[in-house]
Length: 221
Image (cartoon, rainbow, N blue to C red; front, side, top):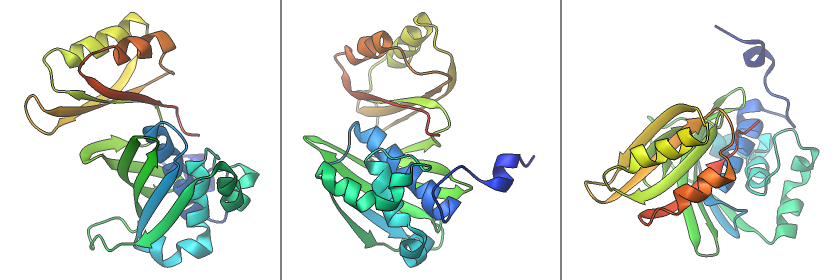
């Protein structure tokens, strides 16, 4: 099925739903996974993003997303100036990821204080995005749901404990995925849900002694 949204595209500051709106949403996702506006950001652009991104405003849109601007925010046109006011430092580089990589791919390396996040995502068209990797873990995130991303030591009962807390607060799970580096090593859990996670539930989850970090990603419009 093709929806009206697929035909008309998202409400956005142009010129391109893929190179501008999608790029901005990828920046928003990187910011959310880091947990704050980056102090330093380095982005590697592949394929069409690298070749035509400047003309389509891709770099400007990514920077705008990193400071929290939405794809329809008119300030996106002045994203560089807005970012300078936050003190964020950023740079772009080109990278060749091979023919199998989507042509609208960007790799983020973002930092704030002592926190750092690395992710790889693509703009698949119509403003839609897919994040395929976070800190070396395979994920499948599109920003279409409220999402909890957490990194923890791989301990028995972790999945049941997290799911139990969410259920106890009336949170309905849409999808769940777990990827780990090995038995009793690190595991990354991504949970997509229908509504924002209550602060009390997030506080309970963050109290787990084996948790490295947990971040809530709001649904990206």
